Amino acid sequence: MPAPVDFLKYIDDNADRFIDRLGAAVAIPSVSGEAVHRPDVVAMSAWLDQQLQDLGVTTKIVDLGEQTDEKLHLPPAILGRIGDDPKKKTVLVYGHYDVQPAEESDGWSSDPFQLVIEDDGRLVGRGSTDDKGPIMGWLNVLEAHQALGRELPVNLRFCFEGMEESGSEGLDDLIKSEAAKGEDGWFDGVDCVCISDNYWLNTRTPCLTYGLRGLVYFSVNVTGPTHDLHSGMFGRMVHEPMTDLIALMGTLVAPDGTILISGIDELVPPLTPEESEIYENIDYSVQDVDEAAGAPIALSDDKVTLLMGRMRMPSLSLHGIEGAFSGSGSKTVIPASVTGKFSIRIVNPQTPELIELLVKAHLEKEFAKLQTKNVLTIKNIGDGMPWVTDPKDPNYEAASRATEAVYGRLPDLTREGGSIPVTLTFAESLGVNVLLLPMGRGDDGAHSTNEKLDRSNFIGGSKLLGTYLYELGPKE
Ligand SMILES: [Zn+2]
Image (cartoon, rainbow, N blue to C red; front, side, top):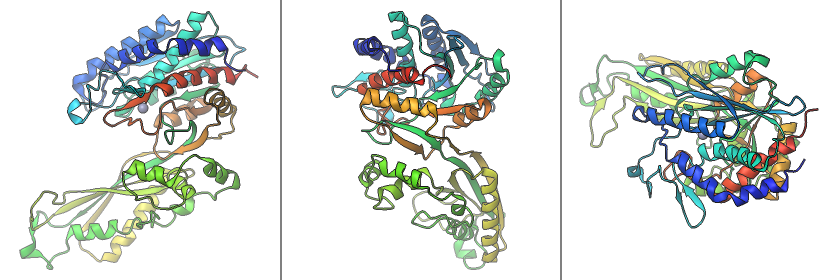
């Protein structure tokens, strides 16, 4: 059903106050990656918990224990619930109240922890779009219903964490254990999940995101001499580790992006006409890539090829070489041991295990061809599974109708090139559909300087979240 007019009007009428609340949230520097800010992350959890309680949500602060490798206590997760009507659907909402580090000296044009309202409607401050804006969006929906004396159209469950920007430590275990408790847990009766923690593909068109790539990160070490050597004494006398490593890394990916490790590109399912249409319909252009990259370096002149490169194809990127000479000047060293770093973004049905097998087989074969006496070691130093869901699921259909109602146009259907690991945890442990429903635009600069959320996205996004709940409709 459409959202009631008085709900939409309440959001408009209270926009300035909502922006003040976002400002109060931004003012708490809840940087999870810096020990000095840990008390602020905890303060942010207390602030958010109080907001939720004031809006009628029953909450529980969950202690997640000690942080591995740090003498720090993890910030708590906040679980919440409002509504218990068996006739209504139950929606689980996820968000994170921690933020990336930010210092004015990084190049911010103002104090990152003071929300600045610019004349063009940009709300500038750390966390404005990632992810405090979307969390405030949910609070705005709750407040409107409380103030209007309206019942929510669904039962809501909340799961907010304070470690997302630092690997979500402790959260997977919490989600799995709550899911395992079934009707006795905090996620009882959940029909679907909504996560608002990504962005429109561009600055113009709302989108729903139904896929994420996974990742496997490799380190490849080549070692020879016991110590660094001098090229004037050993050049052309010994097998040099760096020469071997560069030769190896040169066998991984072609300049046009084709992955040269056999089996990896081949694992991608063929494009269906239906899927092709999704890419054709996305509002995007080659110019969008060039603008975002800051130079005209797009791999193709075809929009669909570019979108598929990011959304439905794996990609391999070379990141660096540890142990190599990297200073200025002209040091004539032969490094004794060098470690190349590269990663592969993967798509369904690829798994990290399968990719690791293919990569190791490839590197060992190529290393053998070098006929070197140096020693090769390959390690997987971090991975995550890809995720894709059905964009025709009723959860997506509801969000699509809500987008049309609020923004006057159907959303683009996108897949992200990066990952949001918690998506997979929710999908797997609850066995329900997960919707990624972004609030902000592609140029918000989530992890960058001068992070912003546009006022129109904050207010429109708050209406969108509420309208989506109405469009979900009653339980069948
Ligand atoms: Zn985020």
